[in-house]
Image (cartoon, helix red, strand yellow):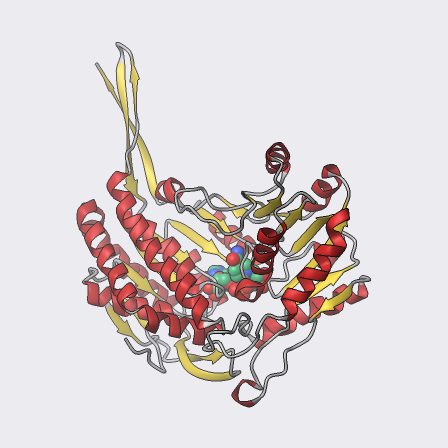
Length: 483
Ligand code: TXE
């Protein structure tokens, strides 16, 4: 499955150019060069997509769960059969190591589709028996045409995480991937055509957020919006959707604490903490970017952590030994570097990294950053309060549970948290008091797709995953029958 230099929108089952005929450059972050063009779609393309979805809705919403299961499973099979092609496209588009794109991004993408294709077969609703008076049963019907908008960090992984439950529950979708990483969504269009997905059930419109994305949110025909991206963008979407009472699912930013007590399993903690700090170049909303270490372990931790991070191989995404690829864009690299300068101005000391990685040859112009560790900052400075979303972590010691809870809960975010301790009572106490939608104890990124996924405070609105997603994409109707 080859990907084309000039990609197209996927509307009513066909790959079509933008109505305006305008295109946007798409960069290869590892080379710093333009390698493809994406449609610069606008409200006209979005209207065409919503009309296509509306046309497909009656048949798709009534075709029954078994047909939806079969077609979605075929799409998952095609992705899996083309795993390397999809992973190659993802690695080129994002700059991440091919090994990560293959093992994480694309594997999870087809797993997302399979998970919801099967879960719809077991999606029971409820009934309530009023003794001798009446019986109630709850119908759950698809909402209708829904909008799905996703970011650039885990492109196909997060795109399918929204689209799969929406389609499985009988909705039709107008979806927009990030303009920075559109390629695997384009390949997904081709997989849908090959799988025989009926025209209009899924429509993919490429383009800029404030233009094509905004048009999806504004369109009177989209009845719900599922969004993952930055908190500031989430606010804009909520403001736009408020006037039309659209159902909203917002998965936003994070500034997640990684709390390490002295009694932890040191080797397991260390091996995982390198990953939770720098996997995907730190561009995962769940990364543990603030590391708090119980004081008596702090110096031992710091020495070992810096030593291991220094050894992470940075470079060619297609070299199997590479652990750190490029960050997604020049603008993002500059944003991350600006936070390193801010950290220094706030009194921080850079223990590793803090600068671009200067590579030679064809990667000379790539957006590569050295994984960065900073210590000596107060818990409430901007560097420790704002989402950086790059290969940058701060470390600091703490003495008591009360103190580290104050630090951990001090930000406006509340997405995830990690706690390392062998003391189960302490683990429970911390989990109960941490402001987070997801708390990992002695692990990180262990994911059961049935669990509620999402955050509190400025990390989002609502939850994805399992029943939460199936219920988000359906309207419950209570029917009460008098005996
Ligand atoms: O997100 P945006 P970006 C954070 C991270 C990052 C920041 C911005 O801090 O630096 O967000 O990243 C579309 N109406 N996260 O630029 O702008 C846009 O086209 C409708 C955390 O990727 O939020 C893209 O498809 N849509 C996050 C998607 O929204 C709009 C992962 C995300 O873009 C829009 C990524 C609008 N007005 C970034 N404006 C996580 N939680 O994982 C933009 N878009």
